[in-house]
Length: 67
Image (tube, rainbow, N blue to C red):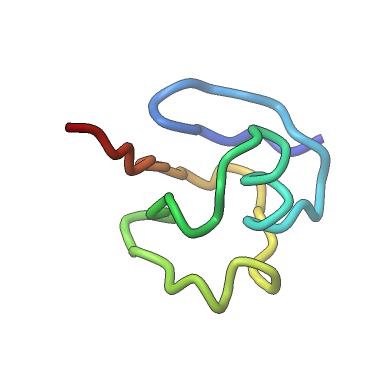
């Protein structure tokens, strides 16, 4: 297990999970989120390659339409 901080909450997740797998785990739509990993905003093309490591700090912002 890896210990991470996700949107300010400490969690344990399986090791070697990718950002894309994390997005799917929380049932978010990849095209509707912005992700910051350890203070750096990630481009969407790295979501499938970037593996989450122990002590990573992740912030996920979900865009919601309305009117």
